Image (tube, rainbow, N blue to C red; front, side, top):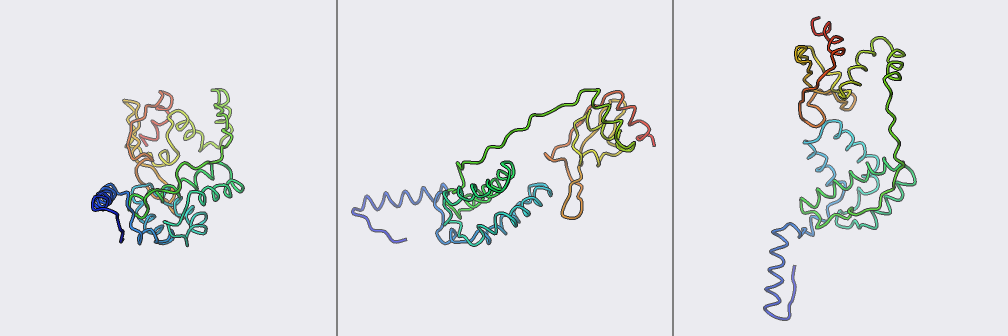
Length: 231
């Protein structure tokens, strides 16, 4: 970049500012900012190795259906906040607030990645006005209502539902429990794996937050597990 300055001191000050900008990552390379969203999206998606398979599948689905068709041909450096806000308004006219939030968060995550890798100086997707959804009131079953629900279930489903309701384990964690995970003496169950959907198949991996944990079980639930563990 060629610049002219009135004095030697002004030129020196400009050079210092450029050095600071480069050191702090606030100076994005102009050539890099001309890369398209489609080009960088492939790199970003490939970099998402730290998220769960389910999240990666969701990333790809949202990208292919909602982000790339709109933004794919745009240079990342040409995207402006008003463009993104207008897109949010279009989404709000077609989808529920929660869906809009999910889609927009993916674009925000991608653009933050662009900043971190110096394709952008700042993200054009910050401080957006997102639609507000009506939060549904949670309804919790009484013991009597739960018993009635359990009785209405097929016989094979009653015990798994009882276990899930009294321990709070996630469905994917429930399906991956094995006899060796159960300690009847301590009435504890070790949750260290979960099954998740990956494309048309399934994958066994760590729990959603990546951490194993011990879950206490009620005496009645422990007795329900006993024949399964012994068998």
